[in-house]
Image (cartoon, rainbow, N blue to C red; front, side):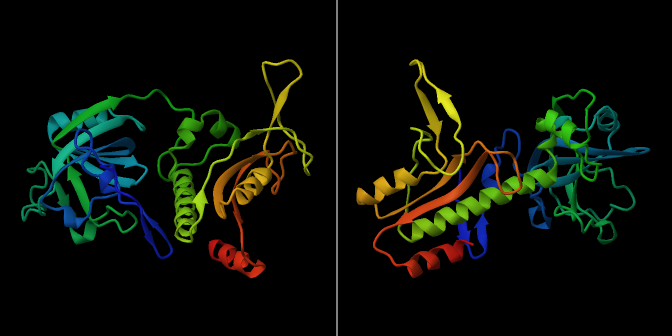
Length: 292
């Protein structure tokens, strides 16, 4: 069951536990904390890094929520871990019992997720206080040699390579954080405007050609010499809505303008578009200033 996002002061909180399905994961890779000690867990994600130290192999597993360290200690598991490659998709199972008192003497006797000793906590990771001693591992998808590296801390490839292999570039935490931020901003704006009585109404993007300030993108139809134009803004639509009695309207509108690419001019962009009736200039400014 999906939970609704919760509106908090300063932004939106999205519960992550509801994203987990027990067939593949009970937690996300950025979710485990010391409070999870005593629970059975499953994790699924991409292999981020592999570090082999003799009888032990450490693997970092990553999804968009974060990274968790896995410990492979059994002989058969170490062999499996050493065959893994970065960006292989795996599923692991384990438990979250408390840190055994024999940890320092014989740390590999337990198939579990455990808390790390104080001197081994990684403060740079949200999950840095725990590690998963792997009980079982399944390879969900293998990987071929990669045209660029996307693991945490790897060197960023040039822009042409990144755009050519966008499906890989999108795995980088920096890009995923940008998309998550955009999602949170959109949801915050939606909740704020809905609380003020606005209606979110989608308007068509195919419209007749209108004389505005920029060139239009034209879309041909099946009828000879007849074209649609992609809307530069929903201006006429929202005026119709006001005349129709829908006194508070907004949408996250996609707009299209056939102009050269510049920092402040993009051919396709999204804007928070709104219109109000029976208000003064100050009323409009008060609404907009909160969004900004």
